Length: 469
Image (cartoon, rainbow, N blue to C red; front, side):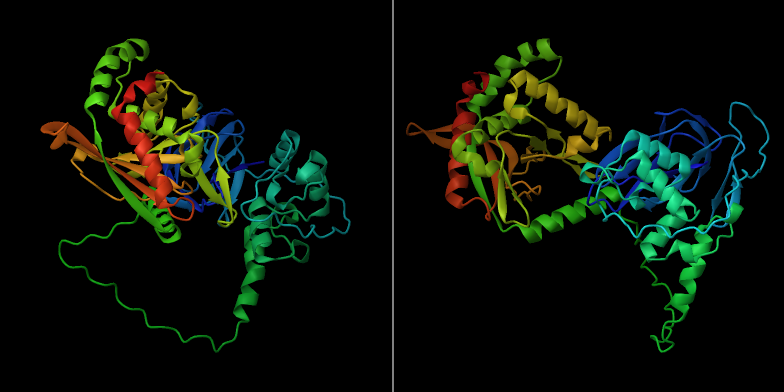
């Protein structure tokens, strides 16, 4: 039986994903665990692996297409197997290694005893809820072509067992997985339909045919047909392009943060004299130990982590949860580091940064930043941050108001370091002064608490030997 390849739902908020590139082509032999294609969900690139071995029968959605989650994007099966797509029987392409001709065949259905079939249980798992199922249940569902979202589980916490899958098959009319999914979404009782597929199996077309009459019975006095307006002509030199999946995710996240959190920004000047001297001292030893160059972002990031771990600054390392009715305090620091790409902004996360030495932090930060720049970040490497930093100093930015990476309570912006005349011990001297900009969610942190955090961070950056202790 052909196995559906679907656009996976990688997170509760994920609605669609973009196919970046199919790594296999129709007719290729695929082994379990092989990478089938690369997709982009929100701002995460992910390689989708094959759950079974077989041959790639059909690619339904191609490179560059944006596909809703759980929609079929291809089929995996056996040589000579057929699948139904949009009412057409599609023969599997022969494996590319054999060069054999394509043969369209139909797989015979097993004889079914003539007995009255009971309607499928009225069950549909809530949208976004993860299916809990045993490995045996998942295999049985794949073998029988059953969508686990439709199977009620009898195990602990609703876990689906193999017996649940087999019981569901015995109680439900024969139908393709896609037909079951559409019927569940539209509230159609499969037991009331007559299948036109092989062996009386209910197909997608049978379900759509049942939906159509109900839609046709809508009041004829519906809104009058509107006259189609001609496409708007664009002025010369104007081009309209679609937003990428990454750009849509950034847009949604920034709007949500801007409209949700009442914020304010604190600006401080930092004398970088001692931090520059420290970097020169540790540059060679850390290079010898890790093979990597320590940057000012590494030093600032670690200073932020050390300051956040002070008990008096716990609200700077917190999140609002449960519709902003509770505050989640973190006894660790997962530091998000904003990385600008040509396609948009991503925020990879250094998990467990509070337990790291300077050399550990250099290795960890370089690893996630490199993955971000090559588009190889995994979902867990972009989630779970408790505080974030963003650096625009290399572009000469003197001050800015960074937008909080929700659900963090604050974000630190790093501005440029500029040679500036300052008064030191009654004398005017030229010192390298860096700007720091702390944006705070006022629902969690008040101005006084934010200022105390910045004072401690400023002291640590200007007296940075503590970073090595």
